[in-house]
Figure 1 (tube, rainbow, N blue to C red):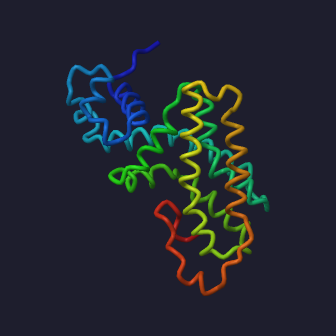
Figure 2 (cartoon, one colour):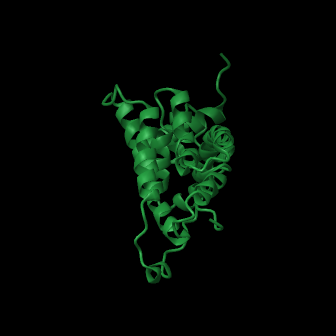
Length: 223
């Protein structure tokens, strides 16, 4: 087996440490030490800043989730069932984590970076991936009976559910508390729960919609 490069070791160490301890508790020096780098400035040398390393971790995983998402979008093309298109939003990361096999840290890493105000605005656009906007447009096309303003407000509730549920499940697996559940089971649960939230009948009066909050940064502006 080819030995891992210092860059690869730094990415793995940064992902693992941030997943376990959070963004602010982990310094670039600590990441270098965890990676076994003799130079404590290794993060600066290979990436620039800790934030740059964080974004590289996201991009490395996104290459896989985008590929999975694109394949799912092609399979769902033309379907009138919004759940099929919603699956293209919710499931690619879970499929990716399942393929990686235990132990994984990415779900907790993502949740930690999204909960930190210094990294959240930078991480959100990177997490979305190139397939996300197309999948969300397909959901919008198949839910045209629900006002766009309502869907935008509902999507604001979805992101924390997605990442917190995934992080919690990953932690259970890591600590041996969940020996029967699978990532596929979690995906089915999330599809049912979030589908129920997004597809519920709308009872908001028109005057309430005129003051609806704008779309979140990770939601494509023309949805």
